Picture 1 (cartoon, rainbow, N blue to C red):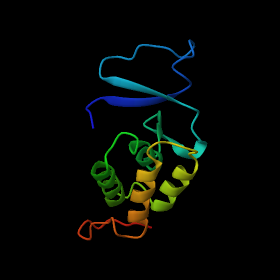
Picture 2: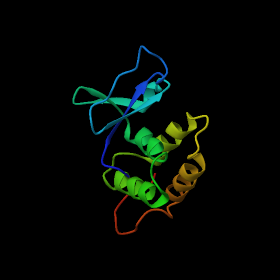
Picture 3: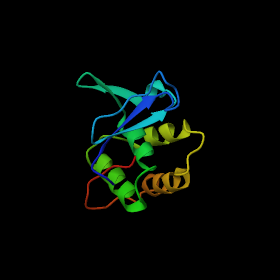
Picture 4: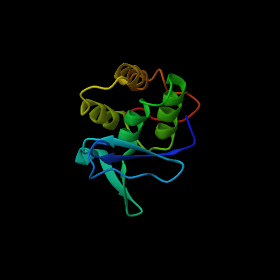
Length: 122
């Protein structure tokens, strides 16, 4: 993964109402509006939930990076697998869905959990 800050905004890069030049180090992704269950507010800033972030991460991460992110989110108690399943179910299609489904299955059945981590996978 890169060291850039990635943000997602509703709309299309082809829509002149949304076009802007991001500051250096920021990558803008355009997407349809997010489902209400996929967003939360943290320190007054609207952000994606940890579950949705894991789903989105599958687009840019390789299998090991994605598994590491799942592991860490579970260790920290930031997410449960049912929330990840619901976030994934709201997506119709992405190139990364097969990878995402495989990693979700690993963690849902417990095979992806590092026994020494103390992470939960419910």
